[in-house]
Image (cartoon, rainbow, N blue to C red; front, side, top):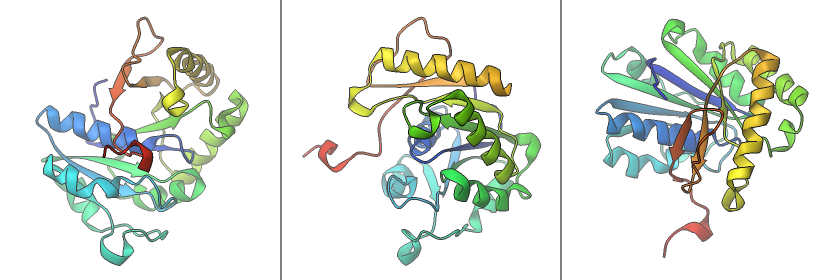
Length: 223
C-alpha cells in the first residue's frame, strides 16, 4: 500500500483495531526514512492506546502526540495543540489514531477545519466479527453515521477481520468477502487487508498489509 498523503487518519467502530494499524503504518513510514508524528486522539477507551507506546516508539524516531501526566488516561476530549504544529510542518507525516464510535468521530470533527482536506487520506477499519458488523446494512449504517459526525470524507475501507490468536486464513477470507460487499454497497474502495502472524496467503482479493502486534495483553507479554 502506498500512503501518498501527508495526513493519514484511521477511524472506525470501537475495537476494530485502528490503533494497531496506526502504530504499524507509522513504523512502516519510518522504515522508509520518513519523519512521523502519531497523534493519539482516542478519548473513548482507556485501553489499547497508542500513547502507551510513547517511550518505545520515540526511540524508533516516531513522535507520539497525546496528553501527558495526570491527563494521559483521562477520558476527555483533550486535543494537544502541538498536533497542528506537525500538521503544518512539511518535514513530517502525521498519523491520526481516532477513538471509536460517535465520540471519536465528534473529536475528529473538531480538528477537521484545521486539516488540509486535499492532503488527507481517511481509512475506515472493520472487523467483520465485531457485533456491529454482523450485516452489510449494519456496517453501512455505522459508516455513514461516523462519516457525517466526523465531517471527514472517508476514502478507503480496511479489512481487519480477526478473532485474535484463533485467526486463520479462512477467517480473513470471510472478512474480505464481507468488506467487498460493503465496498460495493457504499461505493468506497478497499485499501488493503491486514494480516498478522504470517497468515498472508495468495491470492487474496485485496493488497495485504502485514503487521506486528504491539498492544499486548498481559498474558502475551514475554517474561
